Image (cartoon, rainbow, N blue to C red; front, side, top):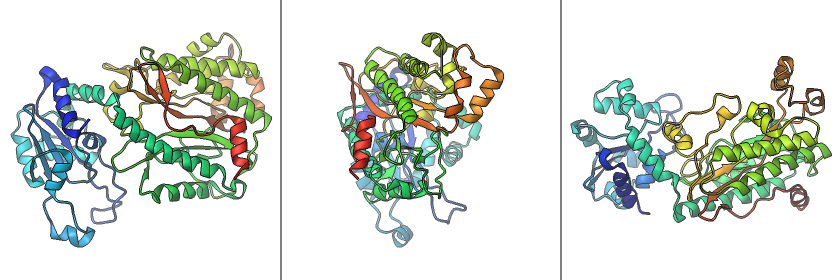
Length: 457
């Protein structure tokens, strides 16, 4: 679908709530002060989706009658001197399929003249402050003026990926797969986390792409969002958890996690836990189809984890009752997955309407409350499936001291796992009319496949 078609469809979806839609590009973020070096620029994903413009300094007004006005930077000699030749505003207009282009300086006046412009929640503080300035309102008033109708329409539209969007995600997955397979064949026993991270970034940047989020590269998989990269040589007895994805300037992300032994061979204990996580993921993927709620898929994956941990003597009792009580969250304290698209956590800047619908209400239960996605699945949804098992010493000690869920957890058996770390396995899945399709060419994930691939390095 073209950018003009997307904007037209959005107006149609707004129906009686339709009005003039205002979209702003992201702004550069300086490190310390405005004239200092800028942080890496990432365009606002909604602006990308409706215009395809990956640059800063733009705004769009889209009218119900089909008119669009693109506001952007005019020719500026200082810009040419400092940053090189710039693409003309008219050229960007042609790219975005907008015929009327005006200098950005006229945007605030035209926006202020509108009676009730429709806009989304500002994604950054500088965008919020800019809107407040243009509308001559306080930041609090700008937040209060966000159009819930526009939010719901954008979510409904962007949730469903067309063939072109799926192809873009699979392009990202193809590149991600190559890097995963390359890293698995590095001499990991003589490398540090920082060196592995450096290898990933070199491979990403050499393609003029970027990561879709800060990569996780850690032998402490029990830390769910570990963004520290140690300098010490990897412990060859541990597992390395690697969670990262890629995206080009126009967005559409991949998001993959693999966990594999630093020395290339799973220990018996590592293999046992890994097989439980893998079975949970495979069961969840198999359950993906239209009409099923993702919350039910999450609960199914959780029950598989409970049964696997029961077989290893770490849990007990009825699996459904254990999951209903939240006992499994000692080992699996996060949600099964999230929407994927232009953003790696697609549209989560718009709140829980993305994952839960409107009004979206999350559970207050530990673990289940971190589930980002619970809504009924539809063809065109692209979702991550990423179960895990983690042994978090502080959490284990706290629950044990409180005798929490002792009807389901074998606390006496956990001692041998205190230093285990964690395992997560993640793939990206498209919901289809017939059921589902795991996107991209497979990335090795079965134990024997992983060991063989690493041995061939």
